[in-house]
Image (cartoon, rainbow over all chains, first blue to last red; front, side, top):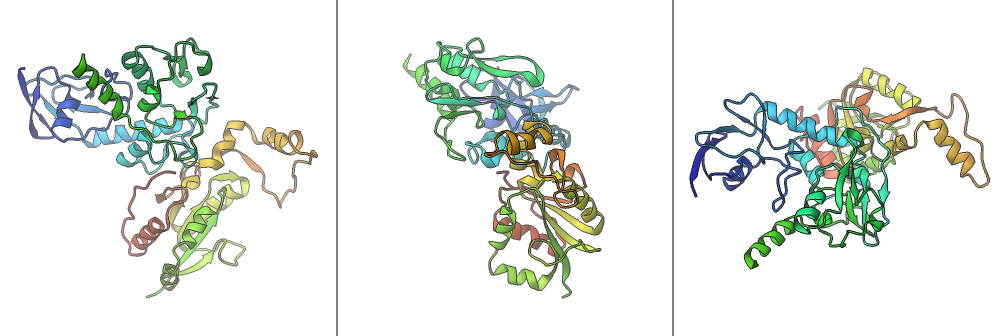
Length: 235
Length: 177
């Protein structure tokens, strides 16, 4: 496959044609923060954490969705990007009720880790404190909308890997919520196979195994990529 | 070495951050040689003194007394540190914001769910009135340093205090929760 040469943060990097900036950076050991990206799923560009600067473009571009091109100059960690990323994470914390101290995912949460990585010492915005439901109608799993960041990893894992599409997103803006089937309680969603891939994919404590208590939720989102890769090998 | 003046304050929190401070065990003796504790739950003093060098604040701003004292403390303190998640984020204390305005909340707790129903406590000048929304400390006064954690561990509190006492920047990042 044709190779492309580009620079990322001043380093010469070689990538395959068609590869994204994010993949090229990761192959070169350059870390770009992500949240809605999950290996094994399609890219969505929803969270904007992987935004990078590309010389010649005055817009910031999502690294997960932008293909590499020959001679491209990418900057992944400028002061402007660092400030945007911190603001994005703060806005996520302000928009729902992410109370780490009483969350099942504490210690195993991508949002909590991102806060540390982007240097979030505190949230400069007013907390919205929305009233959010917790749905534990499913016998094995629960969904706590207080912790949801609308990354749609559950939606994509269910659709693309399980092939079901029980999950989707309804509503707009701050009123957007992930839903099961046509907005029925999860326990009544007939399409759900109870496979648990949404649980694997969820980056926070939004989707949890019932009976899990504070900081007890452990799951490995890399298993989604493993499932996808194993199928490709076999079939 | 002359000792700096040091205060700690307990607002809307569970006192766990102060417990974590006490977990510093024998290092508290070293701390005592470097600071003079002038105000807080661990000192016997009714009013916040002038010219305090360093104040640690545990807890969120939940009532009028917290709000007024926070402003007074800010005026009288050189370096103000938000200690723990309630002071930094509102945390569990701020969960009551989900229940709407405090009068409805008090009504629910003391009258509707009280068994037998009690009266909503009303003692002007003694029981401070709840403010509309619980907020982090920095929402009402400027904060110099943030020390998250529920509670922040004793070693993290120590690292922050050691840096501040040495006139250095404390390690900024800590885990929430």
